[in-house]
Image 1: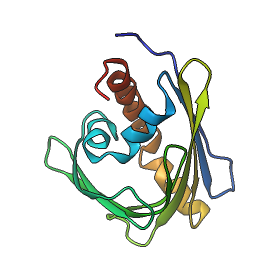
Image 2 (image 1 turned 90 degrees about the vertical axis):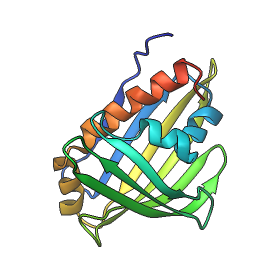
Image 3 (image 1 turned 90 degrees about the horizontal axis):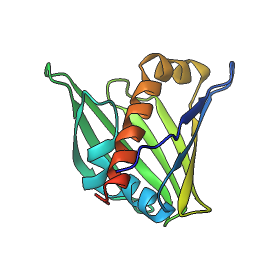
Image 4 (image 1 turned 45 degrees about the vertical axis):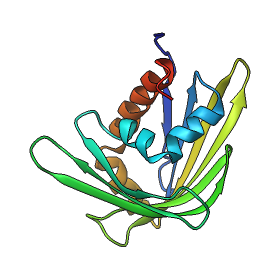
Length: 163
C-alpha cells in the first residue's frame, strides 16, 4: 500500500457564498467517481474518522435523491439529504446538500472529475450557499476537517484496491 502526498485545497474567499475544493487522487477518475456515487463505498469514507455513516438511500442518477446518517460513539446523530440534479458518468455530479439539523439551508455542489496523466484524477467541487452566513456556518461546523479526513480514508480505499 502506498502513502499519498495529495493535499486537499479548500478555498472560501471572504464575502462570497462559495467554497471551492480541489483534490487529486492516485487513481483513475472512474474509480473516484464510483466512490462518490456507490452507496456502499461512499459510506466507507465520507466524513470525519470518529463518525460511522449509514446510507438510508442513494440513487446517484439525474433526478435521484439520497439520505445518510452519521453517528458518533456518544450517540449523536447527524442526518443529511439532497437531490441529484445531474449525473454524467464519470465526469460530473450536480447535487444539493442539506444538513437536517439546519433545515432550509441548502447548498448546491458541482463536482467535476478530470483525468490526469498516469491514471490519476483531479476532483474540483464548487459549493454554492444561499448566503455568506450559511457558508460561514458550514466552515465553523468543522467541514474542513471532515473533508480532509474523509479524503484520507478514500485514498486508503483506492490504494488497497477496495474499489
